[in-house]
Length: 620
Image 1: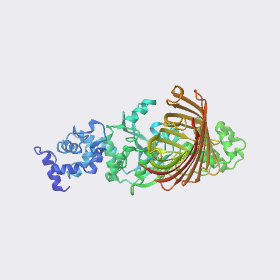
Image 2: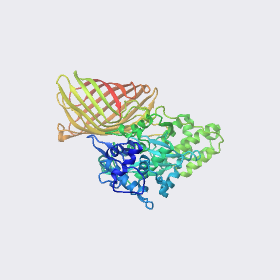
Image 3: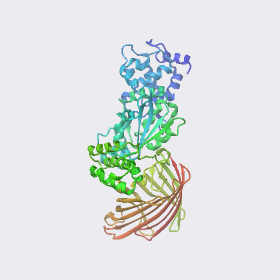
Image 4: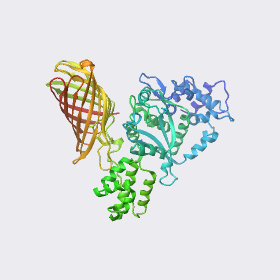
């Protein structure tokens, strides 16, 4: 917009006003042009809806200066010019101190000679000084399946000072977006999170609090993505976050969540990024990290901060059996370090044992006194660190995309069919594991339709509402339980002609172990609850067992799974059911894969043999 247009701007909007600021007025065309400026729409978090309307994602009425500001960028712009520019009082800067980011942008966009917001607001000036020379880091905490709010991961921002000593990042301020749940759990927690009944707000905390919460207590790896933002962009981000401190967004688990609104804040700092525009129905945290790292020249470097569990597993891999057993003994009784075999070990061996013992003591929630004693014993050995932690070969942002569709051609007992599968999220046992929790599955709302060519019939085959599987391998020091839980609707073979929809839910508990040649075996005891009109009293309960063998034939290229399960139906049917399937997935790229599945199923009807070939497309 030319200076002449800017000069014409204030006069037409405020024709009867001679304000304290020499500037410009907007005619209708110029006002509309400025209201559609990406910087303005980013500052007020406007987005176009599915039906074409423009609305702000901020849900606090007090954030808007116009009664129509939530749905009208032009009305909000007009009101902002009036209140922040034309009516600005030299003695009252309260409104500017409330909205410093939009005021700062307006004075620059309209070429108005007025003070910077920090010159009018002492508290804001102090805040900006604390972020002087700051660098921005995006932190991603890996998924945490047992917590619905974090099952897909969590992200937040850290402001790093370039002038402070190395290691001071633990004291650095972090900004995170989260729902105000008042520690509510269970059904109401899930329901309100799914329906937007929680208020989402931005929180401040030092980084060490988040490290303690995610890295240690939740045992989640942290990934630190160091971003390339200029000093002016960091300043704009701080001004914008200041505006958001007293505002809220309606919080939704699957779209307007912790990670999505961080993108909105980054867009406000650099509007041309348009990070939010990549998401519509779902915003999975790992995918929000991907759009950041895939933005040209935005990512500078990445740092990996392993969790307690990862540190302990990697340390154990660097010890021999005697050293591992010594670790267990020392943690239970630190005085053991004064006797054999520890006392006769070399200093390098002792260093490895003590470093691992510190991690193992924390893992076992031993007292602070025990941990300090082990740390002191290690510090008495004048050697550099013996245990080396390595970064996984594939980062979370480098794994396959979280959503997928699949086209399938299959045969079931000599009946051909075409299938379509849609999975909004997230990852199953047969996808390439890189970037995800090893031997885990988390799928949501996976829906399959089949078209049987012989019958010329299209029908719903299944809806897997949710399925979680965690088959973490056991070792001498780390002994997690393997488990699975899930439920949905699917077709059940009551006889050769009746394949009716039923509700199917269940779970299992067991153990998993690593095998040679990149293989892993899980064995579980299962229970299964079925509901359908063909069952006696509509219900049936199955008790049984399952086993899964997973193998990476070519890591990140060719993955195999062999899964079998059997349940005995005990509420009147009195029959054994059995299924086995062999699944092989070949990765073509981050976005494409081929999958072959062979199976045999014995329910209440005749045995069913099946084979299918899928082309899978991953996206976000």
